[in-house]
Image (cartoon, rainbow, N blue to C red; front, side, top):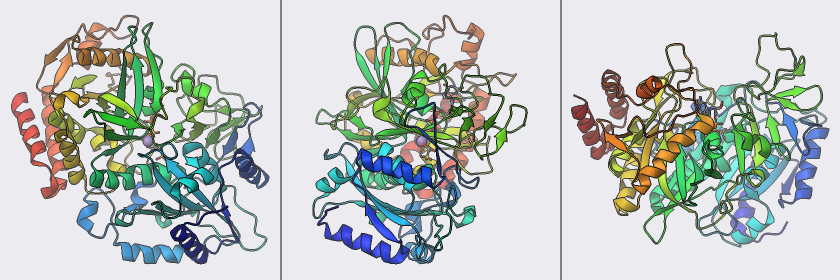
Length: 596
Ligand code: GTP
Ligand code: SPV
Ligand code: MN
């Protein structure tokens, strides 16, 4: 393929000299090329075609390589204080030396693919270009779904356009004649690296082939590197879904939502409202880039073009639109394979078959005591196939945001919904967000609450304190009346029996409806110590299993729990040191005073 981009050519040559692939292939992004890549993986035994799903394939990863590797994710800024206390930092010179050793000869026996990609519609002024070099055909296949790739991107890049350098290797060279593994990677987790060099706008990933570790446009670029660009350029790169909600009068509202990994973004982005005449359409399910429009409002675009969604729990009742999206042309990783050539996972909504092949490739029966799918099994599907994709989802101008939801998994304390009192109070609520850790991260702390400001903790490219200050600064760039209101939500409260009190999923539209009423000025609320909360009768619970007593519990301000929460927030705040914005200290003091 043709490019005269001297810097790009030089970089590709330099990496090829280091990694020593057998050959270098420039991806043109065509459908034929995609099909060739699929054939390569099927022929090599890496992928299984799914007879029951046209254009769908199953991959099974190595058990060491099933999720993002947080403790192997590094921010190698020149100065340690720029990475901040919540990130793993290594000196960039040292890290490059270590990784150069890993990379030397690491692609022997393999092809190095060059993937030019655009985050955001190709050629749009707010899009950004990256080039990923990888030795994984799985990555090429997934990148073609998740981003826009190929020759049109090179055209926009021209002879000297800017791009983010993204280098990826699975870290498994092949000796002459050696048969490939079904999921090549570096099995020792401590030898994987997901590294970011923010000043150079560069990403080096080694040893993992899974998700955000390997599809470098997603978390590495669109959140960690773009976060640094956003800080420097005055916009926001966020771990947020974007949805469009239209009421029976035909008025539409665009809403973003920050929820930590595996806390409901994909589900919320595609929900089926329970009220007749209401409609939800999807703009994005994981990442939002927000910039000010000429009118002083924040406009969001979805930089991705596909969904990399959690499979377990996805069913025709929880998320019918996701189920329809993944009926064709999708990639499945780490789900169960039925004997008739379809997928199955826990919570898919159909009874477990008497026999299947589990995510590790072993025979599975319902009584075997192991899950058929890994808890972080995923589908990769083109966004354009979503039956409720919003017509404007690729509009380069973005969509004007009226509300931002934030929230995590909290079985106690945090009410169903609280409206912020101001932008600064909203940023404060974002800064104190916490969630019970799930299996989307490789960590040993599953179940514990950790503070996860704006669901960005694992996706920060710089100091968390500076990030929170950046949010406060954004608020100063416009009138409060034009800024989105911030809503702290919690779908995950549990009762004494450990059951979810709130039905969640489509029923979350009940809360969304109240939010639009608040924006329109008709929704009823009471001011409490923690913010504005719906009156007990203002969220319609007719037809649900939620009793009035449940609702009172979901909307109660538990003073003791909040005072305990404040102590834990103080501990998290201490970590940010002198970068903790004074405004947030003031908000915390005011909250404590209101509670007492
Ligand atoms: P990432 O892709 O990791 O960023 O996750 P996500 O935030 O998109 O989460 P997703 O929508 O895939 O949901 C993850 C899990 O949460 C699934 O098992 C869902 O079934 C479950 N879930 C989603 N929404 C709700 C809800 O409203 N209530 C309850 N109880 N569970 C939910
Ligand atoms: C997440 O963990 O938030 C994901 C999946 O969206 S991954 O792309 O692997 O980061
Ligand atoms: Mn995510």
